[in-house]
Image (cartoon, rainbow, N blue to C red; front, side, top):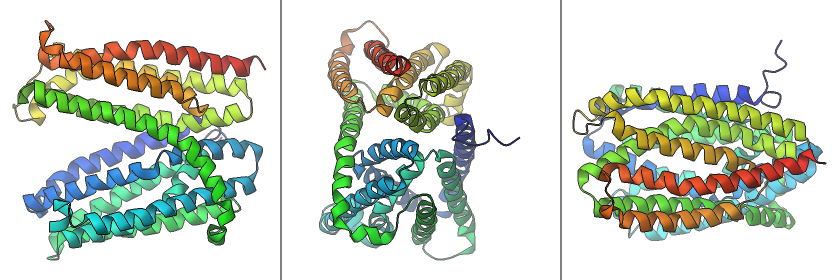
Amino acid sequence: MFKNLSEKQNPYFGVLISYVSKGISFVLSFISIPLLLNNLELSQYSLWITLVSIVNWINLLDLGVGNGLKNTIAKYNHLRDKKECAYYITGTFQFFSLISGFLVILTLIFSKYIPVIKINIGYSFLLYLPIICFFPFTTFNAVLQGNLKNGLLSIISLVRALWIFFAVLLFKYTSSDKIIICAICYNIFNILYFIFILFSIKKIYLFSLSQIFNFKLFVFGLKIVRIGLEYFILQVTSLIQFSMGNYIIYNLFNNQVASFDLLNNKIYANLAIFFNAGIAVFWPQFTSAMASHDAEKLIKYRSQLLIMLIVYIFGLGISIPIITPFVGWWTQGKILVNIKDIIPFVLFNIVLSINYYEAVILNAAEKINIQILFSLMTSILFITLVSFSKYFLIKSYIIIPIINTLILIPSFFIYKIHADRIVNSFRSE
């Protein structure tokens, strides 16, 4: 009866857990905002949000190594070579330990020069130093993903959201510094989480903390770094396009246009989380199928992801009449939109999700160069077209999604050709 209730047997099970987890976490986050505002002064709330946002940048410093390790673990799982997996885990842990040490030094040096950290030095060190010191343990997130345990990661993420939510609820019963309480709760959970993950990994693989001091295994970490750097370059080029896009929008258009564009991007970025959850589950499934040269599974998983894509696109279509009144209510009437204004954003997200659907095959096969090339090309083309957009006979606040959609269409065809070629190469074996 429960045979298919396993992420390894049925990826939809992992996706379902991820959806439920992210949905509940989103609701908790939404509810927490007024609770935080009621219990913190506005200045304290702004400070907490700013400090936590910097944490997200720290997570980017894995240099794409997490994706490289995820692919490697998925491959060696098929070979049932637990010893080799342990070597790669150890080498990656050692590399992340070097990054962690480097980050500690940078934090101590630049804390004197970054205003928000300098003014709030106690809060900053209490929040950042434990996170940085435990940075090497993020290795185990990629290990679980490669071992097809995205569902477990989603459950842990939900527990974290519940932990923080209950901490916020207890604010009114304490007179202590509430930012300190937030930071302590945040770090206590991370410590407990990494202890749990460590014991889980030790059971799955022949890994122990004593191996960390075997520096001969560092060469395995360097192999993962070489793979991961390509993913990192792809992340950076995408980030540059997004950042430059925001900069140009603010400089070329008025505040109303910029607010409208960024607000819609935020709304649809949150909706995209659900499809990206599916991508995260199916990616290692594709890698594992490729490692076993199992064309049947590869085609099956691709069909299942296609069903998810169709459902997601259908959901985007349904969102059009809902988002229109929601934006007005959410912004208290400061930003008003009609259906015609929303459609370009929906079309852009449809094309973007189709691109992701094709690109995940390339990611699983570690064919990243073509994506980096197109990301650079689209970035240059995007910046050029937006810079001259004031001469276009189109409403200024919908020009950005229209340009984004047009420049993504060619990359879709290229990704599809390469993805089909990869799948067909396994089919012909």
